[in-house]
Length: 419
Image (cartoon, rainbow, N blue to C red; front, top):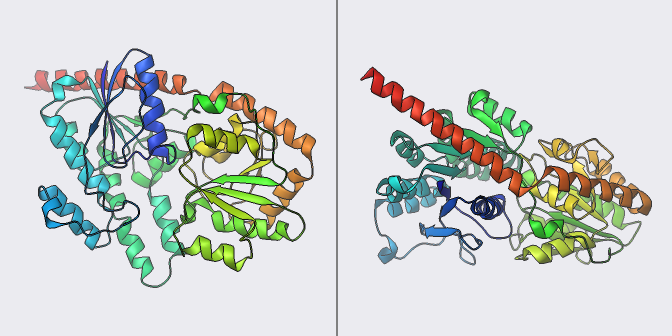
């Protein structure tokens, strides 16, 4: 099968989209399919045998100069102008503008592919591809409306207005999602949320859980560092619950020696850095960024506890990665996380999202009980190995492709018969 796999941004090593694109494309090729990834910046790291077609944006949010003003000579066409205007009016244009570039790029190449797979772009350009008659499958990891509500709730003053504008693309995504004939999501929790938030018929949504990278499944070979807690989350994103974790660690810090390692790059002088300073955690909290998969696996394997304090997750790949490294977990009872970790107490302790006291108590309980941590880590690894395989993800995704192709042929025949 010839597959066009679309992703509007595909940050390597971290961020759900880049991880999804790399691992799914690799396993699809291993199954004998031809895969060509179409991506905007940041571009993905892809394995041998996977083709990459770059659809460059203006990259207006790149480091170290986010929200940059492009030079006039950088503007190539009307889509570039649209991208700049969205940024100037506090919007996030990439899902829309990438979808338009993807539709333009594929218009002349539709015969090169049997199916098009969009990874949560959900821009209006996807409707152009749908009207072309080419089978189209869409992955929605979770509805972005959850992020919007939490960002607006956390914002103050005029920032509430800019937060609403930034997430304006959520309205477009909901409209496009309702038109998509074949949707894949990553958990039953997310399936229900998409149906409610985006108004999508749940019968059109197929659940295919994510997998864990092969390097994560290698047996942990590093020693656990006493008192080390690891969290993987976008530090300044309210959805991820990092302030709750920092306050919980501040409570524990008064009683014992700890090290909290957060895999993220917070905004300099931003809310997370300020909170670390206010809580007096400068010598306790460390941020790391840009880790390779091997380095991330080693870090997770070195922790006594991994923590996922999110207020919502459509799946939570960091949870599965920690499970694969035999690391005991303390997680929020939020979104799909309980579904991912299984029965409470086996692989993880669950606490209510946003409850810093309960989070501190759970972390302290596990830090004081190495035998329990070991049992939970073993149970976590068994669950990760048996349930979360990228090969299984690829096989089930191929089934979704076949179903989409069959449905497309049926619609085409019905149209022909009607004519």
